[in-house]
Length: 329
Ligand code: ATP
Ligand code: MG
Image: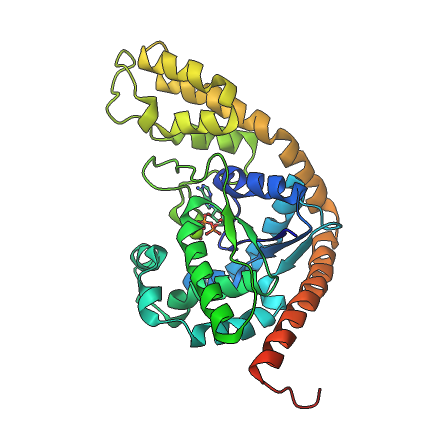
């Protein structure tokens, strides 16, 4: 039995890093899944975007349009919004009851996000991995497609699962990450991972022209000043993008770069064309799905009902075992 849970935070539009790092492995995992839950993690977005609640709301539908355009089929898989399934919070509370604060403080993304946002840490930010463990456990998920920044969170989830199973005699599976061949796509700054919050991304909804303009701005090997200088593809994000989107041309462009046979401008111009080829169909499907009035809302409505049914069953089992009575039931 393979049960998949995967999610993204609606903190902005999905970018091409999500596509290769998360959506591509999700599609691969879905091929041999028995059940799959694809979640827009709006509560998780509040850990950093709590002062922009309306931006979170607006990002939800856009995200779902990208899921559907990429080929996630709502007839076969449950596509839903996290906040529509309050059972995630109920279980998170019980998981939090046996999670030491010191373990949460050690999670690497906690310190990263404090630095990134420049705001004092909050209870929700610290507790993020507990809610993530709950997201997976309410569906008894065993396979979680993610980018590599999420691997420590999954390790944390397995610890939570073990502690919960041991304390109360459950058999929740210990979920494993399912990674892409490009588990971390660099951002256009060449320094950080591509990320919605860092504004170093190419959004899936950008046009061919916008994509080309963004690729042109990309930082390349900083030591290569003149076209006649040999380049170092291993430190250049453009080369990683070739590997991600046109792997068959990656070696050739690397040889040309090392031998100073191609300049950065020409290399990026060719790359922009290839990225546009890669996403041409996705963009067309995106536009078609966006034009269907009420369709995304309907998908999320039905997905929310289906997700809740599974999650409620899990919570009922947990409540029964822990002796938490539900008066009136
Ligand atoms: P934020 O900056 O708000 O944290 P994000 O761009 O990091 O946004 P998330 O919603 O945090 O996006 O991540 C959703 C999923 O996509 C995660 O599994 C994450 O690992 C994956 N992902 C995000 N960015 C990349 C990337 N650049 N390369 C590979 N995978 C990525
Ligand atoms: Mg992130």
